[in-house]
Image 1 (cartoon, rainbow over the protein chains, first blue to last red):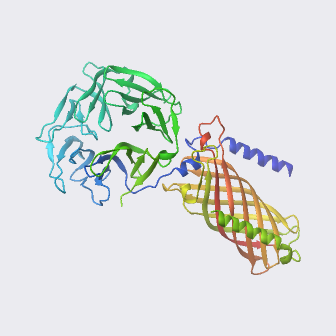
Image 2: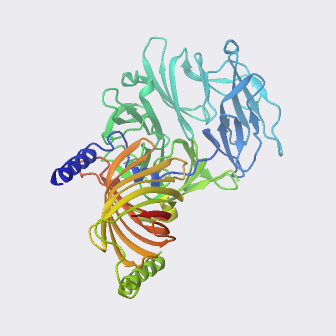
Length: 345
Length: 201
């Protein structure tokens, strides 16, 4: 009898010692943080128009919250790869032909009183379109003025290869290999104005490891870069005069992408199971956030986060909208430190 | 939340206090055995993140777990007229809000006290100790587990009885302070309500 009890205790001890090695969060913690899934697989939250309506891009097309039918859907031998909602409610849509030899088509759809006009095709074959309306290919980075069929190239951003672009609200970061084979960093706002240009950035040669980008203000930016050897996410501070390392985020930062937003002097970066809060100047130790606004979102796969707008299209201070891959949208209210789901009903 | 718990405790105390009235003589003898199967539902009662004051304890719907199911097999032998000891293997499942499945497989040593035993009617008060395999998404854990149960049973003949069992199963997911998941340490409670079918011999 004694032997049996000893063996039972030993087996339990082994089981306890070897348990849960492969998980990144506690089991109950992860379950209690789960968010309600929807049938929608969101690719990008596109933003809100002048009346505050929510636009989003899924695997099936572009939708408005509350509408069953897509505004624009895949079809006619093409799929929608990317889209951008412009300030006046018009849409830029980048379609990729299912025939890979045919490339892509970028169209501009002006918003009428209640519907979208037939698209104007913008000449050129573009690799990608960002949610702030800038787009690029190997020849350069472009914007569209809203009329005609030609795009306007951003000055100095031409002859490109190995382009990595990340957008945060109004600003885009471009890491580009120029014709001389050197890597250079650029930041442009949605109007195409360069805020930083041609900054040497040999540290970002492995562009796939750039996890995120955050504008602190019009002149200061943060780049989140995952170090190749240990996967630690490192924060680089960027101005128009150069890039420097300012802080290293906590070693257990495990996310491969670092979606972020800025509020009240702090940047909140999404990790796998939490948010990391760092000072916007890139200094100090990060703080892990799992409660309050983060409670519903800490395990959600967030596509992007944009400032919320009211029914008149004005930015609401301290409120953000997060797009999630499988749980639609979440309204992050930093003033009240809470988040609520916005569903399609 | 408090009212049903208080009511249940009061009922158990009344039944225990009244046991001598019902049980003028014992029905079971040392050496008797009992086999039971259970099937029913389980309510996610609470999850306490006891190392994370910010998250605290969440109850029922706020656990983000949905009503689930439970089933188990138990075998016990009587050590005396009132006390039986045995084992129980169970299976419980609950879906989370995101649609992922949380499974709990308790393996317990079972102690049951029968303060009421008329031959036709039994009341079993159980204390179960052991462990539970819990699994959710990519996470697996073997947790120390304990449960208390209340099981009134009506015997339709000499051997076969049907009843209802309810109680509270608690599992502990604990991480040391050196572990990055330390703050995720949790005590979880599941509340099964099941129909039981018992065979005694």
